[in-house]
Length: 130
Image (cartoon, rainbow, N blue to C red; front, side, top):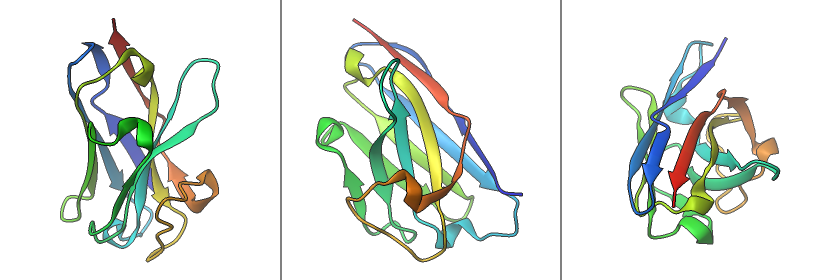
């Protein structure tokens, strides 16, 4: 069974930074062959895609609201996905979810559809105070 576990959330002031991590293990899969993404869900809102990264790490995508502030990266040796979040704003407050692609060697660029991701973590809370 594939396990996807996020960490690194917390409470930070406006303008601060956090780095989220996502450890993938188990299930007999090779995470290095899977594209991954970060999604978030704010209270009372639908979950939205934030960023994605191709299995190789050579292509990335960000939604406009986080471009220039967030950076996604992938450690294919240790099977860890990161999201470095800088210049955080109150509107970034949400539960952040890590997701791994539904199948190997697939990347949909700016699509960021939940249906393209087959494995999900439980989420980590990020709260940005004004």
